[in-house]
Length: 363
Ligand code: SDX
Image 1: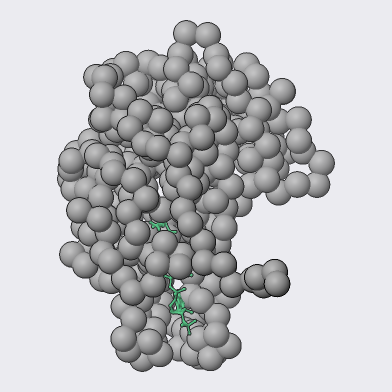
Image 2: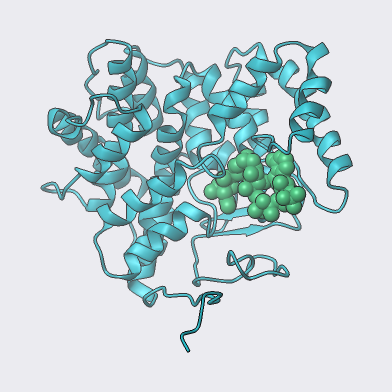
C-alpha cells in the first residue's frame, strides 16, 4: 500500500523507496498504523517499550518481549550515563541540538546489549544531561527500574514524575515512534542500505530531523504562540505571516491531506492526563484561525494541523525546555530509525535513486 501517488516525483513525492512492515501512513484517510495497530489504540493502551518490542521483532524477524526491551533500555541508560564525560565533549558555543548530534556520533557498541538498545537507551540520558547543563545543573543518574518515559522525565527534572506526567510522555513517545518513510527515516535507511553501521544510520536520521520543515518545528510553534500572545492578535499576526509568504509551523504535511491523526491523539493526552497547561484554549483559537486562513490562501491544498502543533504544547506542559524538543523527538523516533535500518539491511538493496540532469552537455 504505497503512500498516495502525487503528480511530481522530483522530491520523491509518492515514490515507494522500500517495502516495510513497520508502519503505514494513509494520507487520504488520515490514518497511521504502527506495527499493525492504529496509533490511537497504541497511545492509549500500550507502552513505549511494547511498541519498541513490536517494531524490533518485525524488523529482525525475531521476537523480543516488552520486558526484555525494558531491561535492555534500563541497562543502556546506565551505561550511557557512565560515558557522559566522553559523549558531551563537544560543548563550546554549540546549541543543545548540535551537541546532541555530536554525542550520538560518539556512541559505540556496549557489552551485553544490542546496538539498537544502546542507541535508544542513550538518547534520553544525553538529552537530559545537555538540558540540565544548559541550566548549570549536574546530570541526574538514571534509574534502570523505571520505564523509559518516566526515567526521561526524572533525569530531566531531578524528581520522580507523577503518574499523569509519565503516562503523557509515554503516549508522546509512542505516537511519534515511527511514521513511514519520513525524511529522517529515509535518511537512516539510505545509510543502512550501504551496510554502514546502526550508529551512522541513526546519526544521519537525527541530522535530517533537525530541519524546521521536519522535526525542528515544535520550538517555532511555541515561539509563534508566544509572539501572538493574545486572542486579539491572532488574526492580524497570521494574516501578516501568510501575506509575507511564511509557513505556519505545525500545519501542512507532505502525505496527510486531512488532519494528522496524531494531532488529536496528543490533544487528548493533554486534556485527559491533566498535565497543567494554560496554553490549550488559546492554542485552539490559534489553530482554528490558522486552518481557516490556510484554506483561504490555498483552497486546493489541504493544509491541516500536523503532529508538531500539539507536540509543542504537550512538551512545554511537561516542562521540557524548548531547545530540547527535537532531541526528545529523536528519543522517540530512534526506535523507528533502528527498526527501519535493520529492516533495510535484512530485506533491502542499496538505495540509489536517479536524478534529472539539467546541466550542460559537453559538445
Ligand atoms: C513532520 O513526513 C513526515 O512524516 C514528517 C513527520 C514525521 O512524523 O516524521 O510527520 C513530522 O515533519 C511534520 C511537519 C512539521 N513541519 C512543519 O510543521 C513546518 C510547516 N509545514 C510546511 O513547511 C509543509 O507543510 C511541509 C514541509 C510539512 C510539507 O510541505 P510540502 O508537502 O512539501 O508542500 P509544499 O512545500 O509543496 O507546499 C505547497 C504550498 C506551498 O505554497 P507555494 O510555494 O506553492 O506558493 O503550500 C504552502 C507552501 O508554501 N505551505 C504552507 C505550509 N505548508 C505548505 N504555507 C503556509 N504554512 C504552511 N505550514
